[in-house]
Picture 1: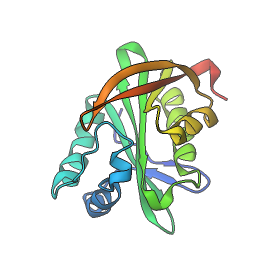
Picture 2: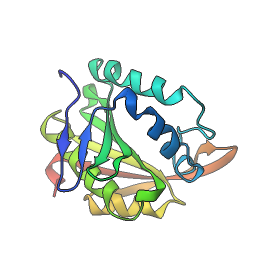
Picture 3: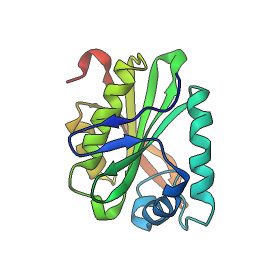
Picture 4: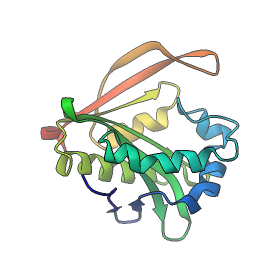
Length: 179
């Protein structure tokens, strides 16, 4: 694996993050509504954190651990992020993403997820891509359904988010099931 790829869809370009994206990352990911739907995005999103996160992407890719791409749209620019947390020895990866609140409900997560999953199967040779989301987030369930993933179960009170136990839905897609 060389450098992080750039992927194109009908409406989006998924590209490596640039340090110049940090201000927008902090604003979009730092929105409490976005942070509330993820396990790892903090709130408040303090100064310098976005730069630190972006700088780590190349090394994670070089170590075959993770592919993180900016989800961009020609008119609006950066609208979110998408990633595959890669486990090459097991030929699998975990799909993750966030989309900024102003861009919710217009299909960007689904479009980006389709492209990233196809990249995982076609370019990384993965056998399985899976994803997890808090059960209180039905929007992510719709994304998983639309990209062809199968619901595999619920992990009851599997994570704690802001001191509260969270049930997590698990979804998966095998290479031969790719729509």
